[in-house]
Image 1 (cartoon, rainbow, N blue to C red):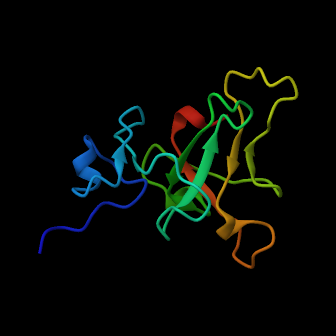
Image 2: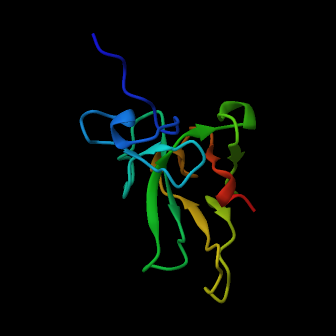
Length: 131
């Protein structure tokens, strides 16, 4: 049997490193690549990942990606840090004037929402998204 598909958050160089079925992409803009699924929706990520929306303050720029979950930096691979959300699911504050270069980042996945019993988790953030 061929090797298993890489998990969300694993390193990669091309899309086929993440999946030969074309259902995962390699984000080569991140250090050593980042296997992900773009344009995720509530509960559409694999069970070992979560959906995060970047640039939530701008409908035009907002993008969603499945990200590797974590509860500490040790859960992430080298060069990545665990970024934890606040009580309302924001990883970065949304600016009042909506003109931030960095935008805001929020948790989309219902599986870790405030009305569930599952502990709220963070995601393994590439250095470019850290504040």
